[in-house]
Amino acid sequence: QMDKNNPRSVRLEAINKINDVAAKCGPEKVQTDLIPLICKLIPEEEDEILYNLAKRLGEFVDLVGGPTNGYLLLQCLELMCDAEETVVRDQAASSFDMIVERMEWNSEAKEKCLSMIK
Image (cartoon, rainbow, N blue to C red; front, side, top):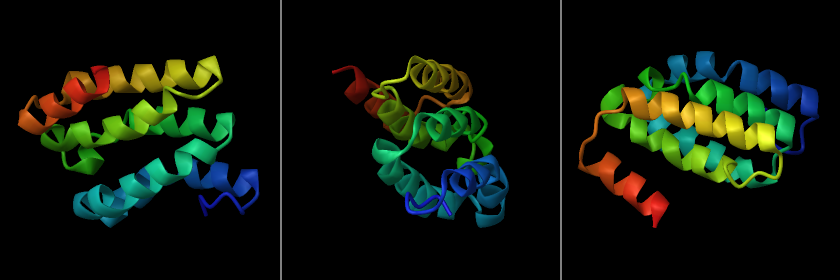
């Protein structure tokens, strides 16, 4: 339903239900399937969809497997920080902060964050 070929209202509804979908999929599927799909769709998506997605991703730490895996969400938010619309970038930054506060700073998390600032 998040496919760009679907009407905007259908994609927005899918984003609004993404937490429920992720909970039903489980952390492993979220990590291997859902996050890559989201990252693939971000560059072509409309601002309203991106804003809502960024907001939802801030609540995704437990859905991705907890603080140990929280860093996996940062790649999606990093892509949203390139959006033209300021509200999308601001929401992505806010969700980024929420995730970083809960994240366990293991070697993968440190590597991901360092790669983002280089």
